[in-house]
Length: 181
Image (cartoon, rainbow, N blue to C red; front, side, top):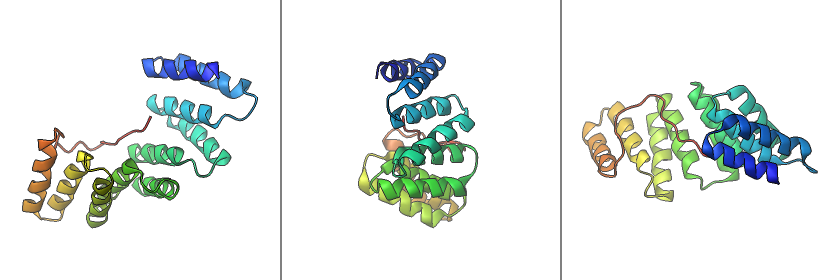
């Protein structure tokens, strides 16, 4: 609908207030329940760091469609940003059950496992994300950091060199996550 289209354009331009207004109108005025409007409004709230409202909209999406993998994914991102790695893993698991080839769900689930010091499990997720998308160079970085934590500096160095070669900043930024729009 027109409200939805305009809301997405406002979001893209960074005008979150107008985006929220139009997406809310799309929800209120629609002839049927518009799961996409709830999802997109959740993304805007998430970009504004208003996680309470974002979670509400993503949960509404999941009430309407329990297989909506992007809602699970973004809930996982919110939990990661809040330092709730176990909850994030649960959301990424659900995202992957609906969309088993989602590279970013594997990458971020691996990152959540890294945060929990489950380095060998994290490596499996990062390696699988690379199998799905060989250009997912961030996984190379995180595999390198895992091997560093496992006291395998030579293996770590190989992965970090490969990541850096592909333009990945190999600094360890504590809050690095990858958000889906």
